[in-house]
Image 1: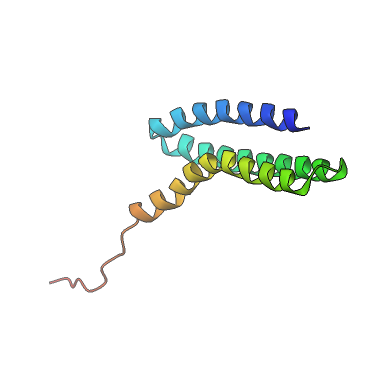
Image 2: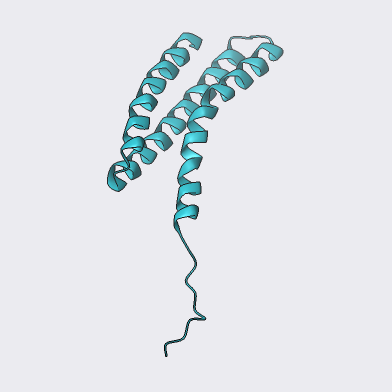
Length: 105
């Protein structure tokens, strides 16, 4: 089960590399889709991590081992989250408040 998670993580990293190329293109439609893909990768990896942790508990692995495994792999997912959170930062930096105080002469 742990090996399966590692393989899924490696495949997700390859996909993330491809997605980062799309993000660099700057095409608004492509960028929006790319962020959706990153969100799906995160969901998939989180679910896989949880299933693997459950498996480790069922197979009577040491609690400390399970804690450490979970923390290590939470860190493995963090680069995906960092890129995904750029979306909200970009959205905030691209919006300017409208100045209602301007008057027409």
